[in-house]
Length: 594
Image (cartoon, rainbow, N blue to C red; front, side, top):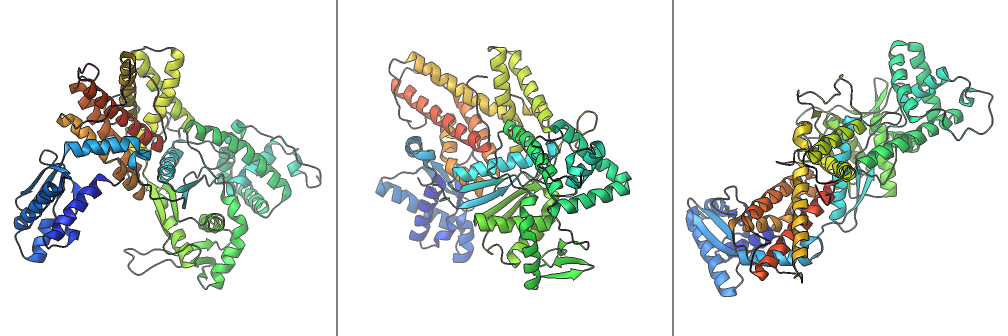
């Protein structure tokens, strides 16, 4: 189903061409003055310079051509088209045409969205959690943004593969192993003479493991001998020392169970649970290949690859792929992971979601990957660098005592806040209120994050995020629940529920709803092209607002004209369906009641 803006642009292009002008001038945009028009075309302004005519002369010619075409063909798109000084073309869409668009959306898969993806594989790297450490608020944005982008791509027909890409292979492992040795030296992992099978049960719980790492980390900063032991343990682990590999597997087993539970609570799911360790087997070949190609060279004992390119606006340092002590770095691991992904999936696009402070790192990695020929030059490699979630003081969000808040505690706090709001006007049982609070709380949390442009910092305000009014997740859900209530009452009062056909809008409020619905495909495509979930958030907020204005001025259920009543029911059903499709893509859902 062709997008409305494309239909309008096509009609304007035909008119420009018939008037003797290049069709490229017929660009149509959403009006920034909705009081004057709904869409506008400013092409006459640019065409005037090329054709040495007055803009208003060209605009008037084009308007006359469009009017004549609509009268001749009988296919009317515009209810109003005007040329105004100094040469703008103002457009209003015909209500009858919009009604036809609405009715086609109702019966077409995905509301007429022509999916651009045809099963092509896209890799989304959006986890980045470290094993043996709990998820905290710093992990929220990558998880929420990444999950939304993955769902957006799937909805548009791509084969999206989400990878958690765990931090599971660095010095932290050596620190944990040596701290465990100090606490439980009798464990078989530390007996050099042990030759039997290693235990199935881990020698620690997740709670103990989460306490071991920070203790070991702090100790390594004060105890040089302990740090040296940890570095040696890390080296032995990475070189396949069996006892330490057995400990590492236990760390992974316990950590993954906890991480999956916490990601599940966010309704965030990964297709791959890979980590830095999975890239290890590719690194020797990678290093040798970069040297063989003459790309990697020694600099102050380290092995580096130049990434600077003509046209760079600032100086970019070389990418270090091996330190002077022979150790690999994050860049090496990420390049090894790219080699694995190319071998296994040959993706048409890569999307990485991390803190924006890692921008240089990914610029280096992407350039090395393409310079070395590991990834095709035309394959997009996108890094979405997100801003910080801050407290009301404008500083990175902390607990009341100044510590880093665990993600599960943040979720519990927002659920409790929503529960309190539900219980203020309780019409449901406590059990239902708690379940509703969980659903609404997740929407509040995700929408509060996703409604901001990813690269920008934002203030986490639990009172604002959980409000049932304004640009919030609960407001969107409340709109959906309101429509569900209308539909339930309609079914209860009607002996025979008519399928109904959406009729031409009778008011400006109703037309505003139909205009927004008609933009659905355009919004969904643009949001994915720009990897910008906030565009979908803005769209559903505008649609919810328009619906609620229409609802307040229209007596839907008491309308005496049966055909009109059924038409409005069909319209509000379409609003509900579109809103539910959008929030599903964003990663949350609506309850039956609120």
